[in-house]
Length: 116
Image 1 (cartoon, rainbow, N blue to C red):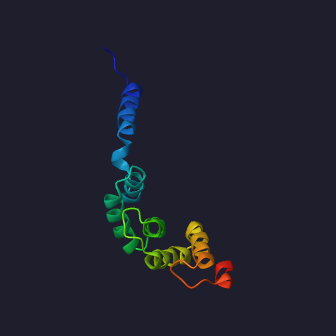
Image 2: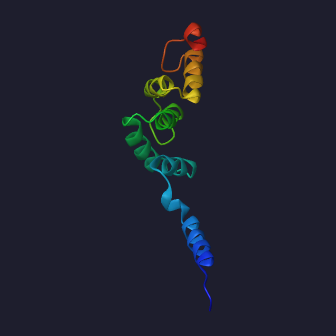
Image 3: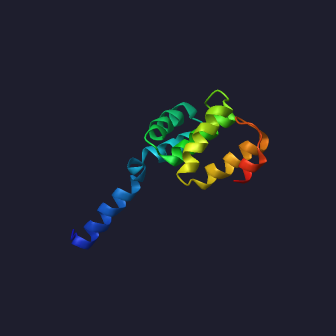
């Protein structure tokens, strides 16, 4: 059987692409775990990344504390993490922090700060 270099390249490429899950980042693994309900693994991954300053992981972890999914419900910890992520420019964290100030969850209700 004749096997050209071109065919060999596409065969290797197809094999590599079919194992894409092995190339995922810890953050992507955390999102995957969170989406399938494995909150313990998601929390473990997000905690590690959040401690390293990853804004997306800080935001995801804040959601877990704010909803009580996989964590004890803790609005103050949720707000602490939201602030860290918001300071780094995470728009979702900024928005959720505003909502926390509007509702007074984890912080004193403050419409001026909510607007800011």
